[in-house]
Image (cartoon, rainbow, N blue to C red; front, side, top):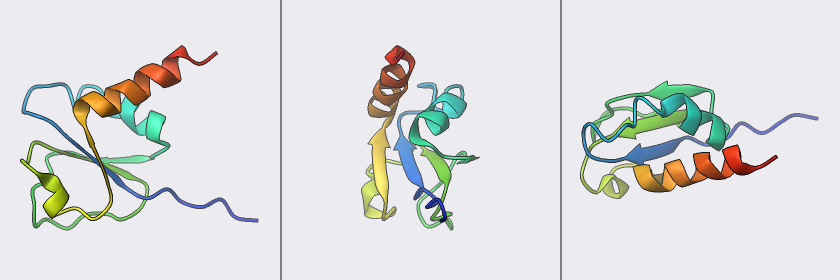
Length: 84
């Protein structure tokens, strides 16, 4: 039996909002092992097991996967911390 590898997830928010600072906690909450910081539209993107961080406006147009705002990602982190 194999464990499926999670698909990558993009988290976007303005510069200085805390994406990089909280990247380990966000990746853990999403079950991802790797982090790609400062992604820009058009740049190659890992499709599996990577948290992709960007401050690009409307990244949905360029990233074909799960996309969360920084606030949504932090809500997931908070939910994970609150669970016993």
